[in-house]
Image (cartoon, rainbow, N blue to C red; front, side):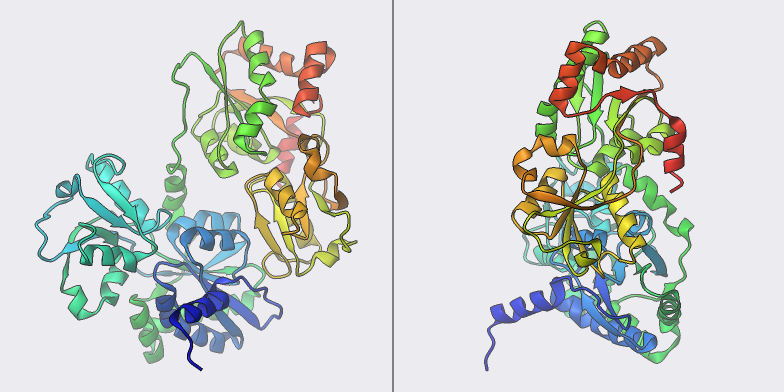
Length: 524
């Protein structure tokens, strides 16, 4: 039977891009971030899975993703048992996604700007006005390469034209066919090029160094297996078979990982988002975490900044939010908002970055697990093997749900799939259109925001309760204004206009902050 190229690629997509649940302790998956094409990933890492599988006495399947964004989403959903990740994924993978480091590449990560051998370009300054092919935006090399341009006063947005490609190989190809003047890549990609092709390029410039890629393992994988794999990976540089594997990877070898090796990645992660400030420094910005899409949030909470403005003698207060929970949290660390209304898990970070609490909701928060009214699912254990829609991982209800299912003996990515959506509303839509077996959300006012989505659902189970949403203000705000805002919020339920505000925003009344409740929450 003759199989067309298109059909062959479709088969590869099914085999290697579709997340599959691990169903037995002797079956694991290795996810490799897609820095090259699927064919190359399969060719390079096939021997890796065979070698590691033999050492662990397990069947290790190879997986990747169609792009960097999808790979990161798979990490977030904890699809992979083992993974080879880039350094910019380290903070989230280790701190949020339940992975633990195994071994890192024994070489620094450096971006090399590559041009054609016969190009008349002799410095990065010569690239002004030119097209530069880049790996995908989330790639570590792309971050490094853009930082290098910025350090020389070359704006990646204005002075050059960046064209992002699917992977490093496509990036180099654009230079080879004269559609781009340069491409930033790393040394391993240069080494993997054939001699004929390699001779057509030269290195124009190299950037500063960062820690390189690393293997990580999910915490659900037994520690004795992770120890065996670590020992095997580190030993590659010392035996014939291992050296053959490393040669095909284009890498020198791997060593043990210390947390301090990747400390720099945390500070770099915080610099990725530049907060927007009010054009008038005398105005105040009111930041609200994006539990529903920002446009809908602005309409829903419109009475709040108006109320603050009246209380502060008509001082202008601008509504602000963010496109994601992570961006909102980053904006808090940068002091982007003067007043914030946020979830309890942001409390500690906000305190560290100069905010003080002034009022908390009288309504506690718990993760409510909803299913369709017609669903046959009756207990939490029946969610095994199912797809669950959830708000972003940073959301309080998502954290509470993860804790609850782990207490029930479930591991995300192995026993069930969690698909993190942009907001609570998009999560509920997944349930409505039967794209998920269950949805994680909060009760009360949030469901009242969208009665059309909530009328055909029923509660399956719920998590523990934690203290509610909280208002905080910048420490630099004068004490008189802080007191005015606090009294305004706490007394809303005592006045006709305040009651109307609470009713319109679907919120319960607010009370004095019990700091001990939030301090304790950080220890859980």
